[in-house]
Length: 476
Image 1: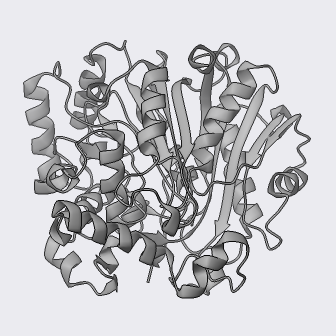
Image 2 (image 1 turned 180 degrees about the horizontal axis):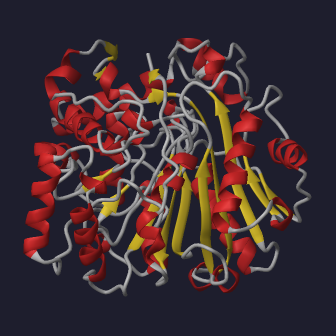
């Protein structure tokens, strides 16, 4: 399977209007992003013969059929796998396998959500359904909410390993620093650990600023064979490896509250890509809540179990830190339309990142169902650290510019020059960086991961426009 995946590439990504978009339906947002992603790839709707989508409709069924009908697509391969936000990460693997097997030529992954507009513009519980069915009859009647489920995991981790609320706050503060560099992020004003600790408690021990945003959004990704991709307008992003897994649906059935299925999906993706943790420079890990990111870091193996709190301390994941994580601002500060996977997938796409960490050659993205897309494989991805071969002078000079110009730094001509230097000096890869992306979902879903490689071509990707989004308000 690993060999087959390497013959497929991502060629286009886009997102629709983001934030609160009350005048558009979820199908409109999905179609809007799809059209722009196809334009980004130099393709049209008529080229699409593979459709991968899951849209939460009133009836809750037939999402791929409804989306295909809406856009005028007659696919010969379709997939509506629904495992939460990470569905859209899993779709990358499924689409790549379908293309490699000749079941379709051009695959469109898309999603649309009116998550905040459906609530009248207010934040609140992700699920407001009064229906109880199947196994959920043993959990939902007792008041278990999404944030409550994550709070249980956080409490357990604190009990077993001594993790503190201040350590979780480190993640929120670091992510906000990255969001300040993203002009499309919803929350860009700086926050401190004290701000997080003083924000109201939503479900102990999680505070308001430990929780993700709630937004409307649409996103889309286009894949095709590597052979066809070479003739398109953008440098293709090759898929190197992927993995998926899920262990439970309800929090009461989670085998271990301190470990997610990312332990399985991440291992698979790394093995199939032929890479190790030391090859990763940037990690885009689902952060529906601060505890989500911490658990995923541990499950993926970037740090030992129980050491996540120490790992993220001292702003290690912030700009200038040793481990660049969620460089677009994440679900905590950038956007979260209910299923974050599609947005994380767009932001992680190699060659399209506006908020790429300096000197990065590997990146990863992960999402889950309580934020837009990303549920099932908590397989977040790789880890970020400065390249050992990057010129010391370049590293020092870049950080100096970053400290002095927090918002404009990535667009500063001198920074652009240094970024090019760092990319060309990446070890093992030539001559452009590798990007990994993994998405996962809520504590009750699955996890998935995939790895990408930016292929050599014209340097247009340095100026690529990443579909970054913004959202209305925090959960709660």
